[in-house]
Image 1 (tube, each protein chain N blue to C red):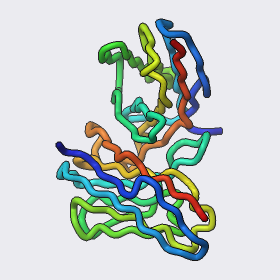
Image 2 (image 1 turned 90 degrees about the vertical axis):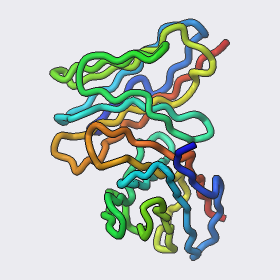
Image 3 (image 1 turned 135 degrees about the horizontal axis):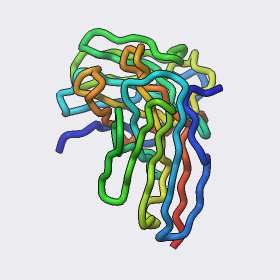
Image 4 (image 1 turned 30 degrees about the horizontal axis):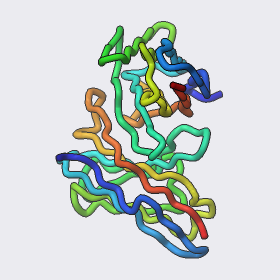
Amino acid sequence: DGGITQSPKYLFRKEGQNVTLSCEQNLNHDAMYWYRQDPGQGLRLIYYSQIVNDFQKGDIAEGYSVSREKKESFPLTVTSAQKNPTAFYLCASRSKAGVRNIQYFGAGTRLSVL
Amino acid sequence: KNEVEQSPQNLTAQEGEFITINCSYSVGISALHWLQQHPGGGIVSLFMLSSGKKKHGRLIATINIQEKHSSLHITASHPRDSAVYICAVLPMDSNYQLIWGAGTKLIIKP
């Protein structure tokens, strides 16, 4: 079945450590997105990519980095510069960055700081 | 002021009740999405609307573009409908980036 796979489901980070969250899709979608969700707040866009080897910062990109070397993969690295990384992270994809195309979501990764 | 406001923030109802969740927005939009997030965190798209009304099973979504308002209705609610329902809008001048509401937490008691 086609879909978006995020891993791991739960992740713990030590102070000063970089961690990478995986997002893989087999939907052949061009556009991929990373969101952060905090309690009581709407999703906030971290980074997005509309095509391989290209990505743009979202609203809260500081302390995060991404790569898009393959169409199906869009990993997110939470760097030590992100001082408040504890949150729920959602990856999404869309066939093309267009109005009529629905965004599909992964199951999410919950990141906590030790 | 948030550009997308949902109400209520929390809603608890008895099984069988008719549920209404509201979404108001302040920008011109190309489309509005309703999504469902279950306790495990995964999100599922329910509807995408640009005008009128859509129905899927017990779920109905309506939108009034002039009033900048949308509603999500659930008929004959069931405990399995318990989830967070999220409204998101696609502004007309956006680079296809959604603006998200904070969500409405719905609990249906048996």
